[in-house]
Image (cartoon, rainbow over all chains, first blue to last red; front, side):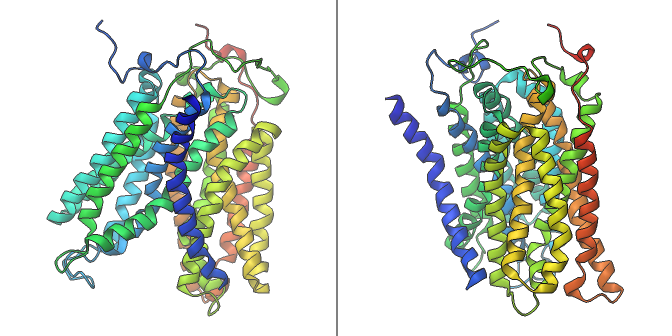
Length: 33
Length: 449
């Protein structure tokens, strides 16, 4: 139960952050295009 | 005395055997939300076209007027962190996070009202004052809790949360653009509606952090861990009261250390896009410059976690020593890199500089813990953040003023930043000297309960 809670909490903060990082990297690639 | 409310500190004490890694997501939820402030510039241009929609009408707000909103928010961040630091320590992280959520979220609502009524005072009051207070209280609310949960790795723990502040902009920038696109219509550019939705999202997300945060019992420590009192390594086992701490030499030395480190980074960050376009004229276009800004944000975010974690191994003083010495070397090299015309080297140099800018923010709470102890670290951190407010004005002003002065005196735009870089070296040298002067606090300043 504790492990599930741990995974759920980290996903709640990790997923939006991963989305933001991916979007930023997508934009950053234009620098070297 | 009645029963403690749900938000009170007593109701957040973790039960025995609680997994401490359940706590950082709560801190991250708050910092990822308030980190939106770094992406406020996404709204700058749309806010100047509220009446004209496609272009600014004569009655529309100017960019300068809109620009004050962010400055006010950072000013109130510093003021509220300094003023409410003691209250945050007393009230506990849950109540502080909840108050921060209400302030930050309602700041968006008041601003949305100001935008729909076209009253800039309401935008200043909403995002600048209310939102700024949410930023300050939210920023310091999880810091001492994390330090208490991770006495063996305080740098890593606070670095994780403060990394969220850097990461918040990476989420908020594309989110703001997507929301404005969604709400755009023939009569509105969608800014007010986007503010309402963002207010709701951030209140809920920050309240999620408030309701999941836990503080450790007073005598708690990680299994098998013994506090290592290493006087030679500037780690104290004693505590210094916040009212005493801010009167010590150490506090003001660290204030200058943070101020110089932030000034050097924030000036570049505020001018990153025009700087790379002017130094590599014709070779770096606006879209690529936006990519450069995004890349700097990634270094800023990553540096917060990496450098703060490294500081647990090499010590805080040595970490800042690296920031200042490497920073001086890199700033001194930038004009040469500009002459060589090497974009990858330029990006790498500023990437490392911005990683140290973020690292400076993330390492300072652990530095304060080492020098002043755990008891009032949140409140002391709050007062130290006034250095950020000063640097927020000083850094961009230096970069802008010197650039304009150079151009007015006939220096080509590509070379107009060279003097700025050397001035940054001087500021970093001042920070280096102050960092080297930091010593233990004298025992007569320690708090005896």
